[in-house]
Amino acid sequence: MTEAVAVKEGVAAKDAAATAGQTESGSPTPPARPTDPTGRATSPTPAPTTAWPVVIPHPSPPSGPHPGPPADPHPGPPPEPRAAPPTTPGETRIERAFGQAFRRVTGTAFAPYQSAVIRIGFAATWLFFLLREWPNRQELYGPHGPWSGDMARRLLDGNEAFSVLTWTDGRGWFEFVYTLAIVSSALLLVGWRTRTMSVLFMVGVLSLQNRSIFIGDGGDNAIHLMAMYLVLTRCGQVWSLDARRAAKRPADRPGRDITGIVLWAVLGLSLAVAQALGMSGLSWFGPGPFPNLGWGLTLWVLWLSHGVWWAARRYAPGEPRIVLDMITKMVHNGALLVIVVEVCLIYATAGWYKIQGSRWQDGTAVYYPMHLDYFSPWPELSRVLADSGLMIMLITYGTVIVQVAFPFTLFNRRLKNVLLVAMICEHVSIAVLLGLPFFSLAMVTADAVFLPTVFLVWLGGRVGSVRDRVLPRRTGAGERGPTAAVGSP
Image (cartoon, rainbow, N blue to C red; front, side):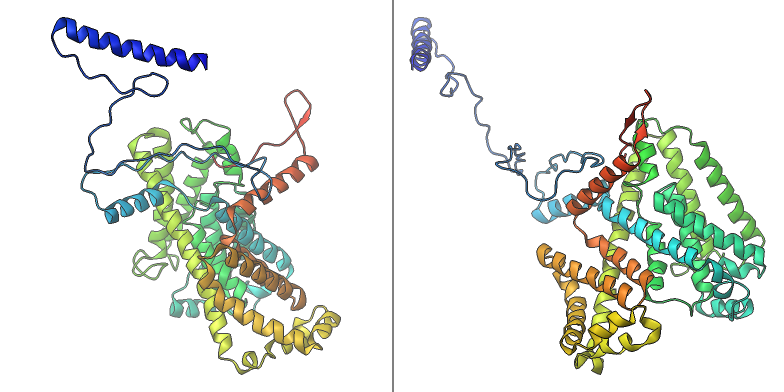
């Protein structure tokens, strides 16, 4: 109370002194500045302008504990601070919305954890499949198979597909390509040189699958498509050896990277030799991934883009690097959008085709594959489910409802997560009951693009904690300590 009374008396004394000075001098004094309740002067309110004001809210502390999973001990890099969007006098709401959308698309690489899961999942699926079929590789994709090299070349000339296995029918070349596919899948799985390994992974997948297109299922088709999309994504931002290596060095000092230069030079020389020898499928403007854009030109563009990006990061850290970074983020976001649309199309078309089948309409479609010996790895379990008419009807109708409804629930987070869990459980049951593990693993990986980021961060933290307990790293003093976090630079 005494402090408040003293403040008020001081304010009154200042006002009286100002009035007396004006009377004695005979000249008007400038108007007194408004004050707050403590007596401090405040700045006058400026006149309103035509531009919309920018209001930056101050963060307030949370009122209670944050619900959900515990915080990730290795959450990766902190998010980039978002500056208030600049405004221009006379700018309309639509123009401002388009400007904000453009800045967001070119300034942020969306879904780093989801793209990492897609990279790990599809690389692991293809790697495990190649390792399992190692004893049968010659009959499946090699010269000893029923589909001869001449037949494969004539088929590829007709459907304009790409495969390096048609360059020669020698066993040594086939063994080299098959081994390269295994190595590239393993390196892409751990995230070592992800940009280069994603291209080699794509070449391996296309070469083997297009060599014998009649061997495979829906999971192979998903791997075929995602192998091409992964080349355009920045799938090594988190959970990769590249992110670990980048986190150990300053961003403004990328280093010499002798390994990357040697790898880039060897691959460029190999591509030049193959094109000079006139190998099939390496045309400039013939059949390729895009109309009138051949595989030869596509591979050269990818090779040159990797070199330009390395040179910009090392020798042009200013505006050229910023522009290239914006382009790569925009390409990454576009590729993720294509992956999302592709997964929605897979489920939508599968569901609508099922609706047209009479067995799916009467609720008995699931009954028949459970009685096929080829698709019954656990006959007793299949028989138990097949003998229950209610269970068969629920699984049949539930499968159709989930597949048809899923694309329409993407804008409802809770309903989307419920259907996502249902689809993952469906693929797990297909792997167990029908003996299709690689198909199920490929589809579960495709579903992972819709998983919430909070869940993936929590899952990564739990995996990191288990890794630190099982494989502790020795520190410089000889003591055991936690391993370094694998995060984005």
